[in-house]
Length: 307
Image (tube, rainbow, N blue to C red; front, side, top):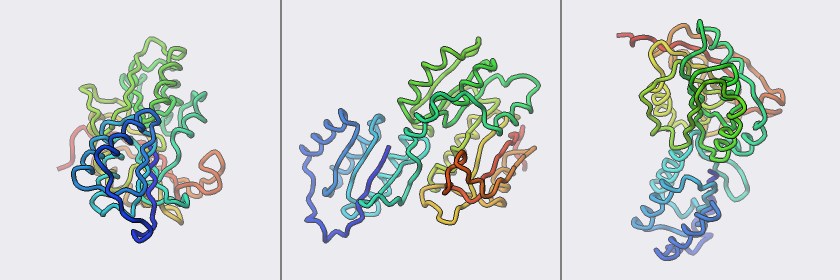
């Protein structure tokens, strides 16, 4: 979902309270176009609650445009929180000049479409697989996109894989591709709010390739806890974390190496962190990558927490 918030001052607008009728007309238009455009309007408590209810249920919405100057700080925070929960990786916010602020990230739909033909594991996933005597029985691919790693896992014979992503079209492409890669294994998909994902079967391997940093800071702890809750004791994680770049994005979560070590030490053992600083070739984010250092992480969840 793309969220655009204008940053013009309130004096630039004759603040106009949106009517209940007009708000519902906009909702109906958004259900068809997948874009909700509310620039220039302010909201009273009842209309704002109606907006939040719509954002909670409109999982196919791809763009929301509002005027930041006409929202109070509490309304802005609630919009960000609600839209973040509808996607796994956060939202993209731009002002009227297209400058990023708030919870900003790559256009994931475009990124997913560009990688739709790939069937390849990241090196962190390959390293984690080497920790198993045989293929892991149950794998969660968090941030699967169109299935670059999901397909590779199915092709090699993993018995059970769950692909999680907020991009509806990417998940549909993944399911169609899977028919060519399934090798007696099973595939499940999930594209609802990740914070609500709950399965009785916990993962032997939980992979999150280039996913965790794109959670906004205010949501990272809850997201991390949800990842841990879906990983069995003795299971492994494989994925990436970012060190802060020269121009950090307020909507992304960064860790210094010490912070990352402290985070992992709380619940994991046999921790491997490979640091690739200035990893800025085109294949890893272009000439201006969204990280100052790229941490490749593989770690084993403890059988029990330290007392």
